[in-house]
Image (tube, rainbow, N blue to C red; front, side, top):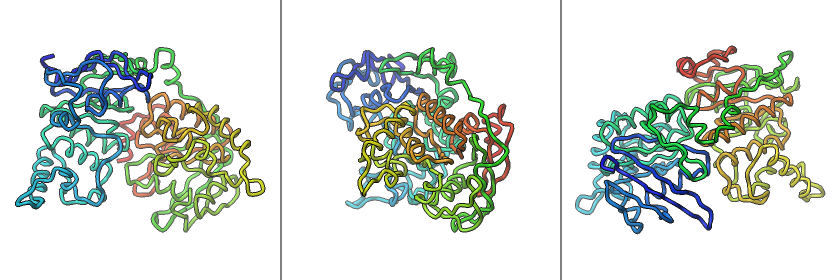
Length: 496
């Protein structure tokens, strides 16, 4: 116990008779980066909230710096040692970087907030960790990667010893992730202890010292990282029988005689550089580029969010006009957006309402919705996509991230789309849900449809696509056709 900053022994956690954690032992050494992985619902968030003090364990003991922590210890008391960075950002857009970092703990001079001190302290901190961000800059002007670095600063500037991070790189591209982990390594070198919960398993292998795997609330693996492989971690997460299915990449039959979609010299008010490409029936066409390269903007053009002002779009040999999203859906094009929570779903409504929203007009009969037909469509999508839900009327907010994403995909399938635009569709979902989403993609293109696909994880672009277009500054820079042996490092070099 001497070298452990945090140690949990025999932790159990029950919620209304349901056991979320079952006899869990967990430890974090001083100056250690520990990975925490598992499927959605495995118990990762529950474990971190117990460490932070948000939840009080049903039974078991917690030690910090070798001393037993009473169950009554508050989050505020534990925050002297432990800070938490959540997946969703907690920053105020209109405040400066320095104001965010000292929010609710502003130093005062003669009763007035000492802004100069805040700026100088943040600058000193950034200099110490090699972070190049202006403390006076408003947060709304920062890149997603820089926002995550501000979250780190906010967590540790008050001299905490441990930082718990929940999916810290989920929204970051390869370049921003690299910068993020450079900062994390500096934290480790200065003696901080870090827990990283992530679905990006290669990050665990590349950057962590040790790994804990949870499955169904139990620890199935607790090892130093140099004694495990990716396969060992996945087996611990899912069980032996599932690992071969995850490795399988399906061979697609692509009909290259005639494109299902031809895009010719399209441009818009906000994206002035004309681009052209074809995609064929049965194909998943990848778009690879850094954040800000124009990948999402191209998808927004084709979905009518940023209407096309120049050029032509030909779908199934017919010229179509796309002025708005409704128009795109009616023409057979559907977007699975970058952020499912703010762009793809209405969280206060049910699975049923969300799934049928794009096709309500088609279900109307004498101004009334045909509820029986609608329910049959939803049940078919639940079955074909393996959506885990208490029922069709369950609130969408009750579903896991992976199941929420499958509902968004179900909306595309229910609307009988021919082209699916998938913008980071596997963001924040576990490895099992990623496999199920990949299966849904294969099912969609096997019917003669096509997918345009982009992701901040280059490994996903390689594994899910048949051909890749490299996007730089809103232009198609290069086309990669033979990608069977394409490495992630080579693709990163190509997009930079």
